[in-house]
Length: 194
Image 1 (cartoon, helix red, strand yellow):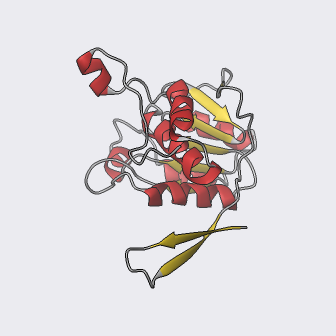
Image 2 (cartoon, rainbow, N blue to C red):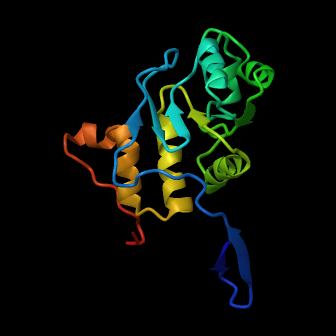
C-alpha cells in the first residue's frame, strides 16, 4: 500500500493518508471501448476494464447488467433527478437491490451536491469493495466521464491532460467556453503539474 504524506500549512502537522492501489486494470494505450450490445441506456456506454461509463440506464438495462455479472451501480444523479418519475420512471435503488447489485449514490450537481475530491474517493471505495463489473452513470454520461477522468488522476496517477482526453472520448465533450469563443481550449493543471 502506498502512503501519501500531506504537508499542511502548520509546519508541525503532517497528515498521513493510505492511498489505495489501482483497482481497475485496462489498456492505457487504447481508447475507451464503446459497448455496442447493451440496449436501454440514455446515450452511449463505454468501458475501461471493469468500469462501464454511461447515461441513465432503463430498468431493463439494469436487469441485463445483473444477468451479465455486474456487481455494483454508482449513480451520480441528484436525489431530485432520481425522484422525478418523468425522468426516471422506476426506483433505481430498489431495483438494483432486488437484482443483488450494490447501489452507491454519489450525487453531483448544484450547491447541495458539489463536485469534490471526496466524490472521486467515494467512487474509488466502491471499486475497492467490488469484485466485478461496475456501472458508473449519470443522465447522459457527462458527469460520469468527468468523474472517471478525475479518478484516473487521483487513483492511477494519470497526467491531467491525458485523463481529460480519455474523458473527452467518452462524453465530456467540448467545453462550453470553447464553443462560446469558437476556439479549442486545452485543460492544464493550474500548478503546472502533470
